[in-house]
Image (cartoon, rainbow over all chains, first blue to last red; front, side, top):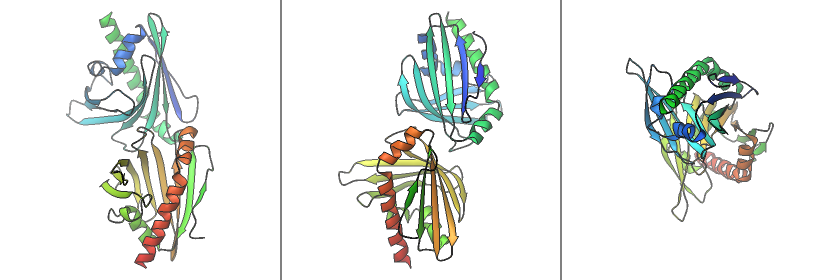
Length: 157
Length: 157
């Protein structure tokens, strides 16, 4: 099933999202790892996403910022832990507005031929941090990013 | 009981250390939060510890380095999440040799009059990361740091 992001909480410290995209796996891998493509889909449309740092290799850092209409900057950062093209990326994620609250995201890209299924597991230190993320509107933000990915892949087809 | 560090693993993602020091709590708090005092006790004696960054407030960063006789630098870093003088510090901890593996350390200082009991809970994302830390010699390193703290407090008395 493409076109819908399914979000579940299979344990008390995880959020799992699953979404199938109408694009072959190499193209989905590029969308996740090419700094030229990130601003085209990462985050809500109302923000301008800027790639400040994106060193896609084990131990490499990443930092993206959102700039709203009021000019305020919101930073997000982390470290790539595993980079296994074209199937798996493990990275940390930290919103700079809540420094020191670090989660681990594991994205797995499953090759379905002309489609790709992306499963993302977000692992938190505590249930409280997991629930804080759920209540932050993360689910609708992720759905919007995924819609923008659909549009990116459609424009490339 | 002073003079011995007790290390336990009460859950599959935690390491807990308990140690009682012969010093009043204000002095123990100072040892943990004063950048002038950190190099006198933090880490094994064979390394020279340098405080690169130490911004002791919620959201503030810290970074210490060890320099061995070969001149090689080993970096450790994190973010202070809670700072509640003189009783509680919550901070993240990351060894730069394994970037993106971030644990949360909660140190609680219990006032016992002329003594202070320090309980440190280290919380990891996974059991594998916890066990990796246990096997890294962390326990003997921590005991050596605590011996050095004993010496620091004795010299201040």
